[in-house]
Amino acid sequence: AYRKLAMQYHPDKNLDAGDKFKDIRHAYEILSDPESREIYDRYGEDGPGGGGGFGFGGGGGGMSQEEMFAHMFGSGGFFGVGDEDFHHNHRSGSSTSSRRTKPKRGEDISHNLNVTLEDLFNGKTTKLSLEKNVICGLCHGKGGKANAIKKCTTCDGGGVKLVVRQIGPGMMQQMQVTCPQ
Image (cartoon, rainbow, N blue to C red; front, side, top):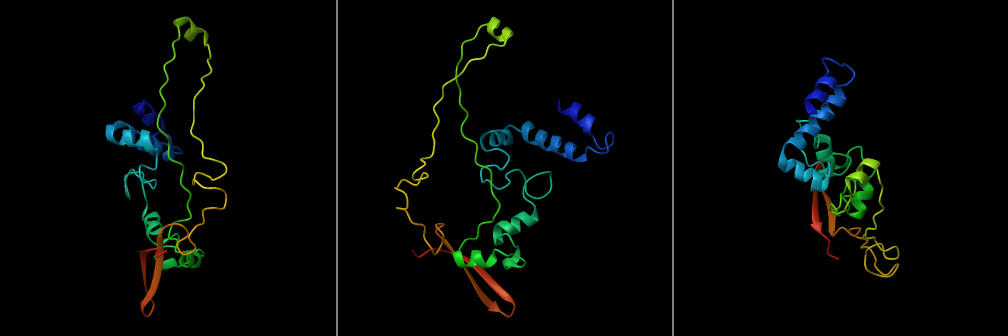
């Protein structure tokens, strides 16, 4: 299937399909390697860390240099240059990027269903009743009554405080320290 799609969408044959060809090649690289396929099946495209798990830099996927610096220094790059959220992040102690990540995929569910060949041929449909864990609407999964659990105002509940200090003219140092509260 890969070879057929690669031939169909190759940039030499189809000039407008360069991006499609890259997607096909990326999918083949993940699915052809049993180890990376297992990681993909379990965690999806983002990998176990949730931040671009397949490659770093070139090679068709993963985290670009800009994303790496945004992850390390906040969404504005080096020490918040050009970052409107820098001052907010500095005050709240949050160094997380403003990008939203996809929710992680849950475990696969296996269910045995007895069907006959006739049922398959006729396209019989069957309804399944499955149990699903749902986050509590009252406490939102935090385990307490509404407004009973307060978020730390120093670190915004992250447990880490961002400390920025000037170490010279035009030079700043940024450190993460454990929140004292």
